[in-house]
Image (cartoon, rainbow, N blue to C red; front, side):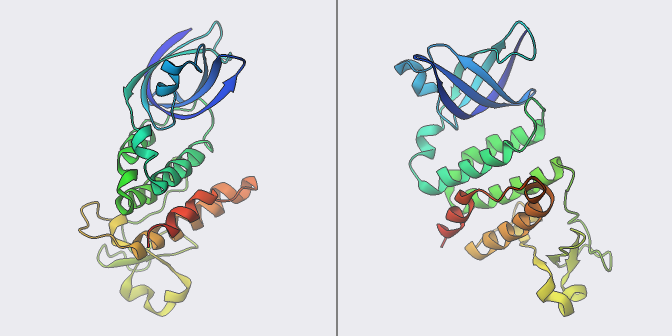
Length: 238
């Protein structure tokens, strides 16, 4: 068997004296592993860095085998990511989220969002905001997408400022005012990608919102917690 695809390297681990097992999030084949012979050579070590975008050719006799990867560098992002702790935290969080998906399960929309996210992570607050958007998309991919299109109580599409923790639906300011202490804040930038300014408080509120639903629907049923790098990223935004 053989196929070729684009992807982003999520992780690398040693294998034997000179090879490496590489984990790539590909566009059409999902999260996929493969052996790179000579992966520990100086030439290949520059390519096999988490965050780098690559063209991957995978070969194996049978589909269920680990297989061999031939990887060519498409865009080198690893060096830029390594220049800031917040970018590394953000990448670690996104990679941990992607590892919750079944291996070899394609998610083209999530792949495209991830590639965009990798470019934005060095921008600190903007990168963190895009990570929160990425978590919203991840929830939808798991089948637990939030309905932020209209108010759960009145049906209005105006002035949506909260989300019900029970239903995962948006709530308008007027309808939710009496129950504000029981609702989750809905930052404007999650509704409008063109929002002019995103504050550290907005991003923290967004992570509180996505973290609540990720915990309830995705992590807790598996006995897992949010990755520790997520809290470190939030703490770095002030």
